[in-house]
Length: 323
Figure (cartoon, helix red, strand yellow):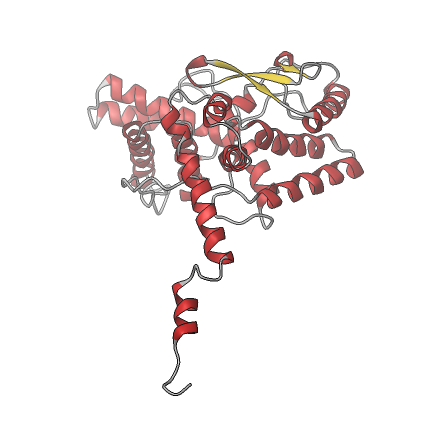
């Protein structure tokens, strides 16, 4: 097995410490779980399950997407750099063995950049996607389409993180009270209310889910075989929904979280209330969304007000003598 021979190489030939070898093995296991959605119950150096992982087909885009999702989940830059080093060392080893021509981790940069403002979608774009996907799900009647439409609606309607959606328990979703309980970072629970539209979607999905998998499930969102979702699947579902239908380059579940927060603030929600809904420990973390709303306000002003642009004002004041 490639991973096992690699771990032997860094332990025996590179003389890396046992702690470093363990860290590298855990990083590779986490990466393959991200790509396949199959939990590895042992260290990668042992005999693996048939999880469909093909180390030789991994691309730079796969590695970059993995690191981006870890960063969005709050992982520190130091840990992200170590994980990239683990993969880079692994693929350098495969090149030494003549199995690869290039290292897919080499072009992934971890340079520190100014933290950009979160990307949020236009409210009209989100509404159109929700209505179109709901109609398509009703017409098609398929379990996967109904589930995917509900995933998009729930992410936008609740602002929950991708990991919170995957970990959502069926018994934590209460349609009678119109609220759901999520487990956030550091296992902190919070209650998120929801309205009639999401309630109706949940009821329809549950009926079809139970009929599809043959009974209730512990996880709220599942695949057709009853197994829970995994991160890359949720990424693909949201990207598919947004592709060609929304502006912006970053089409991910976290964009819906940003949109949830900015739309609440744009429509008059209290900042502290938004903080509690998002599960932020610090109000300063939530305040970044006030910068988004101010940016949108400024853009609208510049586009709409006849005296906002200096070029238009200059044009009006230019004249030739005698006119």
